[in-house]
Image (cartoon, rainbow, N blue to C red):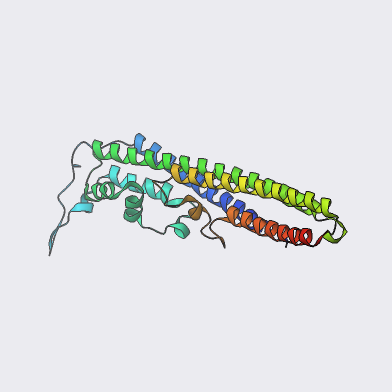
Length: 258
């Protein structure tokens, strides 16, 4: 049974797409933080005429928002909410996005503010820096994962190539000693496969430790749109099934060979 490497190719394509999205978000938060730092906080309530009376009373809250606070919102919309994949991936409005990225406390503080006070400006700048740092860490993990998948693909190809070489001579044309040597070769390939599985599981554990605060399972997150959530392990399992089949055939032939 031939082992397909399509899952690994699909994984690499998914990683390229995720890296592009993450880099876009990283640069968006970098730009937003730069604009927050460059903005000027408002020391007190802006000096403006009283709001006009209405049938239900005075206008208040966001109607008294000063230019600096409004500018900060426009900056967020122009940077973070304008990445190419925003609508498809998130689709949040401003307040939903702010709460998701910076936490409900920051979103509430921003919503209830009428001016961009120095403490609020510092809080938003710190939150933007934290989101920027999260994206930088995620890009690092995506790069590590891409290297791991590429390396695993090479190792699996080499293992399958060796298995193909061993299969060139029909079992019926091999004597007992040749069959025994073939069995030992298959056992060595099984050991190599187990090494690859252990290495892959360690890589997954490393990803989980690195990003445990951001996503529950980074591998499932990266490959959510693929047919399997663990494409490398699934491919290794397919190799294992092929090795098992080959080993059983050799064992039966050995048992039948005088």
